[in-house]
Length: 254
Image (tube, rainbow, N blue to C red; front, side, top):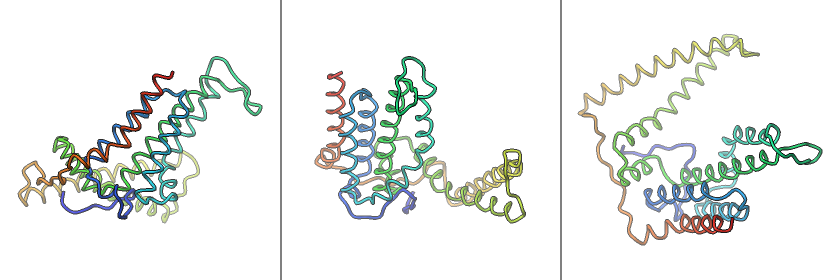
């Protein structure tokens, strides 16, 4: 897994978060996520603190606000889904700006939006400060099975290739006059995806044979992450521990 693989989530910068050991960042992010998930939905103040902590981490890591907002657009389907909860929900209803909305649906909407957006922001900050190769080394340092890290590494490296194939196929169809106006016109896309699947399988076979001819025996060469000292662990886990303190306080208060 040698060599860095740039990706759309990474921000090249020099910051304390960029220098932090990847295994520390992974553990801290997971602990923080579990704290957010376990927080009662009624504790609005707790979610505000989580947002402030993540905003501070983004500022420390020098991740541009525009970058964060553009990556947050991936949550648009979840936002649209959450907006339907108050409309289709059952139980007591309240009038909001002339609309009759379900109280339970409003709570469900808030719960989904708050936790999913905070989780997404956590993942974006982690990805913006950690190269893919470093992330894989961090997972290895955490004793994640080598087969899992190898699959993740191949997936990341070839997702760009697959997306490029899809883009070229779509442009080729458009160049031949295919401009779909309804779902009935999507049949050529199905055939294109089928052809792409076969090409991807054949490419994978060629890559495997090339690796095997170079001595690959089913195990990638070891590439260990730098050891993280006690001080680095303590500093790296401060945001996560703060989040858990907030979560426990919120749970006791409700």
